[in-house]
Image (cartoon, rainbow, N blue to C red; front, side, top):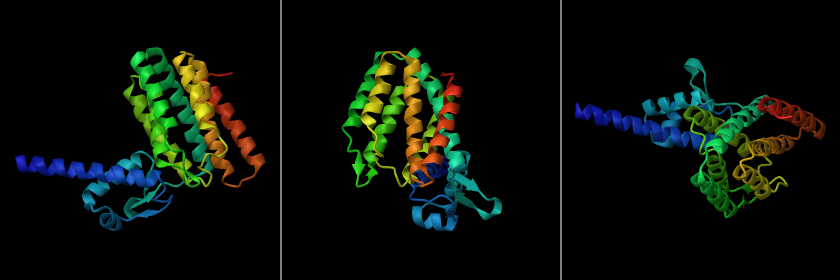
Length: 247
């Protein structure tokens, strides 16, 4: 009985490890959109058996990072402009709800963690060559996590984390995922100051614009033309603000 329990625990651990590694490789764009994910190849590349791999792939499918093709196996989820826009506006809506709740419920410890996360982020090297650095990506996520840390809704936070991953993948895939002419420190400072001042509408507005600007930079890198980008971002901004109840 104990041996069976140990084996089940080991299998579960291997599945978690496989999930974490595959998720990281998909988000970082090491595994490209549409790439075939053959279990026999993944076994060799990741050193994990077929059963934990299939469990990990099934979980990644539920998170929309992988698509299942029936008996043909799995592929890395494709990308599209329509999907990027849908992710951006949904993320802005969910982040807005989480941020409003956190501002309403946050205490001094919440405030202190936001300030500390912002300080750590400013200390991260922003670029690695032409791209944003991995330490900056981690620090950026920690900062945004700190802002909503007092949300107190597990379901909201789980959905928010999924949307963050989906959005992050697009940014890392973009040919323009360096600074893109942006002042990230200033954007983050505005969000932080509004949150600490308990001005929920301002914090939500600045955060939504922060997300929209990331999408604009990604679209600009796709060489679709300035008119297309301007029209698309205008429509996205209208949808985001309407969904958030902002004028």
